[in-house]
Length: 114
Image (cartoon, rainbow, N blue to C red; front, side, top):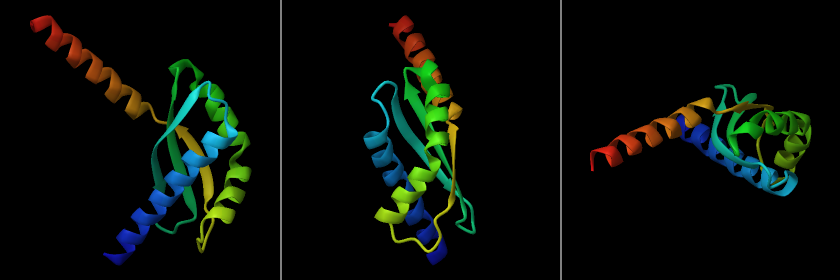
């Protein structure tokens, strides 16, 4: 169980650092939001999921984030005391987009019944 807590703590640290890094380094158009962080059991690889507003700028954001992955690793080195600095990958969080779309459809259905 202690390893699970450590895993959650590191996920939380990396999510916070990713959000801070993006806030400082990226344009505000598109707005990039970190939605989740997944770290491998050996703590050597991390995938950071994100979405953008507007949605059609996701590919541009992915290019920006991939291009700046090494700078983000340096940011982690400066701001976190981790034994290993993981290899960073960024991925568009399509699941979050689908969830938002389902919420919109349900809301439309509910409003239609009123």
